[in-house]
Image (cartoon, rainbow, N blue to C red; front, top):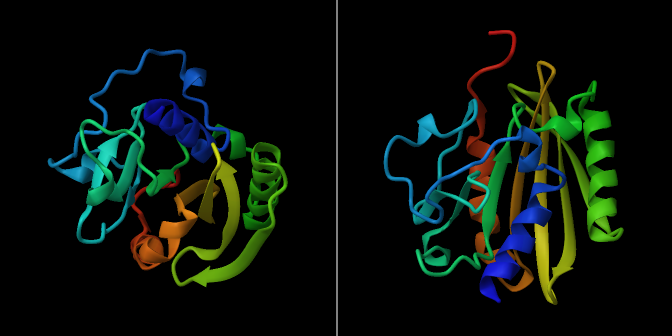
Amino acid sequence: MNFSRYLIFVFLICLGVNCASYNQTVKCIRNKEITENLATFQNGYYINLPRDWVAYKDIHCNLVYSPKENVTDLDTSNSTVVSIYGPNIMRTFKSVQNIDELTHNSINLIHKNFGNPEIFLSKLIHEKYGKYTTLRFKTNILGDPYVFFLANYYFEDLVYKISCSAKERDFNKYIEDFQRIIDSFEILESKNR
């Protein structure tokens, strides 16, 4: 049951990102902590992980981050996960023209995938990347209440999304870590460079 719960959880986090669209077979060692140079695995961005957090590949071979206490080689039912989606995998949002359109499309996708949860929207300003938005909502996954916290960036015609999620009972435990990750987020490349 743990494996199927994790599979559904990862599917919902991806919010429409479909690895099958690449028409390739992906192989990786999943749930193994990445200890080598993490920057070689990141897709044009940098983050500073909080202490006691690890990076690893999930069942779709996507790079994800979790508190070390949530990850073991034998258990794939992680409940606290941060995923960062960059322009190379965000086909769903390629046609957006600005942060407002990105936010609107993100809200529509949340409603489609999660059954119209109440969404709390914040519009913020990043000193380097300009306007960005955060979306926070609750949903149930296989009977367990989860909280999602998403940050949306539109910079130089590129979309980046940070998805943070945890079981509702754990969310407050990790909210400061989520915020540290979002605060440390840095775009390293763009199509104009």
